[in-house]
Image 1 (tube, rainbow, N blue to C red):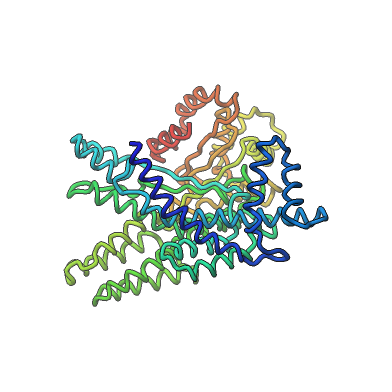
Image 2: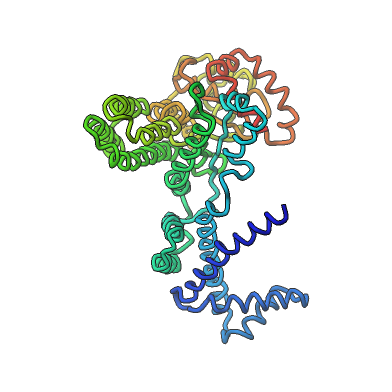
Amino acid sequence: MSMRHDQRTEKFRQIVENKFQIYNSLFMSLPYDKMTNIGMLLPFLCEESKIGYEAGKTPEEIVEEFFKNHTDLQTEEQKLELLFKIIQYIERQVVLFDSIEDAAFPNLHSESDGGTVTNLFERSFQDHKIEKVREKLKDFSVKVVFTAHPTQFYPSSVQRIIQDLRGAITSDSVTQIDMLLQQLGKTPFVNKEKPTPIDEALSIISYLRYVYYDTIGELFTKIKKTFGNGHFHLHEDIIQLGFWPGGDRDGNPFVTADVTRRVAEELRSAILKSYYSHLKYIRRRLSFRGVAEVLTQMSEELYAAIFDGKTITAENILEKADEAEKILINEHNSLFLDLLVNFKDRVKIFGTHFATLDVRQDSRIHQKVIDEAFAKLYGNEEATQEEKFSKLIQVSEKVNADDFQDIVKDTLLTVSQVSEIQNLNGLRGMNRYIISNSDAVKDVMNVYAFFKICGYKDEEINMDIVPLFETMEGLANAQHVMNELYQHPVYKNTLKKRKPADYYAWFLRRY
């Protein structure tokens, strides 16, 4: 085990550390405004820090010693500017190292390493448990949920450089790497303005397009081929994506109904663009009579959906793909069939939603909405919190969101547009309403009441209403609340319609 570890360490040193040292030397002449040769000073700062730390000096003393011994800076402003430039430099070094490590991943890891699909197959084969694994895969799924942290993502301009840099490192194009590092040196890592919820969402959507579309598609194909046989079908929901930016009001008070709708549109546009690009590659291979015409028509329909606002569903795309597949099999000896099957699998995985946009809001905000809606419909009638939602879930009268203000109006507008988003992105595009700080049955039933007063009939509510027990009181009371919810006739019927096994699985994974 130790020898193997030493071998991997040496391999890492050779293809990551050594490459970093080579490419890092290019940083020495990177262009910085007002100051050059930042990289030359870093080793001195490192050495001063090491010596000063061992001598018990304070950070202030260490930095002042560095300025005194290695610079001729006099003013506080000059010193702060140098420190800021050093931080900028190190930021770019981190990007370089990450890009080198990412590019080296296939050489550092074997497909049969522990935890890989191949390793799982080999173990199950040796233990005569392949059929048990296949049985487990029938209902197994993993959900990756993207959340927004405004301080932890790069501007889109930097992301594009990182993407290109990774490709240049993979091909060892020193000239291209040098040019990209120069671009990186002059490109700001900090947004000029505070990012909006749309900015946050778009930043993560770029990762969906340029990383997860291929990665998840390739992983799905790998699992299917490894464990597949004539009778086994791998369900397309084995890997699911959840998306909180643009839907999580509790995490970002600037998220509105308009933001949620826009993010849903961006998710749909991003996956259609991914299909369009993928199809361009497939059409270069499937140039056969009959097949080419069908794929051209599909490409035109995708283009119209992306740029002209035409409606297209995953079913529409799959119908065309099935038509092309039939011609390919019957008339062209199934040549390049795997390319078309791979494309169809991705359409089944990502639909027209790419990732499921979740809505989340605090239960206390919901109570304010219920109180104002109840007052609008029933005047000053006295009622407990339980009586309020009980009456509201029975109403047939739709309230007008414009009759309210601020958060109440926005909450009702958000609920009102759920069906619109589901029509465009599919039911998988939005099907969870998550309630922060839940601690009572009313917190869940209040949200159900929102749908009723927004004009939805019971059978039209295609949403999982999910409580998050986050406070000590809420967690202590969670079992009692859930037991009561499971017995509530309205909630019970909702679970039956919404595949309760999926809901219970989500709930258990969360807690």
